[in-house]
Length: 89
Image 1: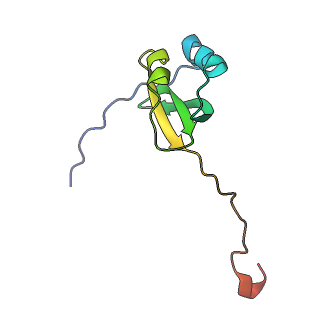
Image 2: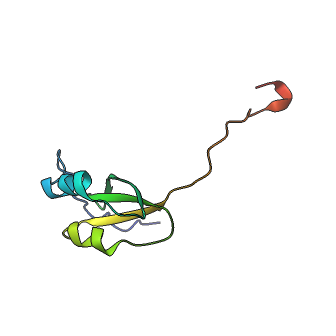
């Protein structure tokens, strides 16, 4: 079975672009609970955590062409439970 040739993906530069750092430090929106950096197809991208399933067009506009990945913030606190309660583990 032959695999299709792998497509080359550009690697991230060592430092994120200055305009993305500026967006991280200054952008605010009521639906935004957190903003960070991630990668998308080998390029720097913004990771926006939101209060619900929503896009923020203002963020996409100031991202200047960079990809914006959205993630809904979970309001539930994770609970640690034993993996094997019968063995007290």
